[in-house]
Amino acid sequence: MTNAIVEAVGAPKENVRVWLHDVPKENWGIAGVSAKDLGR
Image 1 (tube, rainbow, N blue to C red):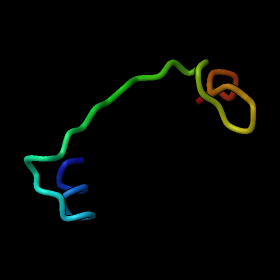
Image 2 (image 1 turned 90 degrees about the vertical axis):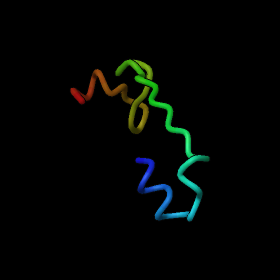
Image 3 (image 1 turned 135 degrees about the horizontal axis):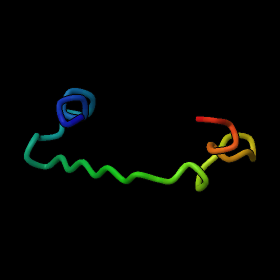
Image 4 (image 1 turned 120 degrees about the vertical axis):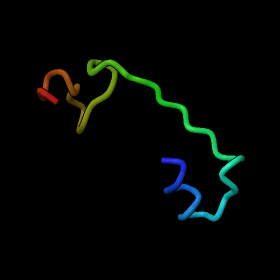
């Protein structure tokens, strides 16, 4: 991810921070249907 950001926007590698946040399937959805109900 860091390399992709560096290549895409030219940011110095030392300034790039990557934060991964796992969201439960029942807390996001598509077209008003939760990801859990969609089986994703």
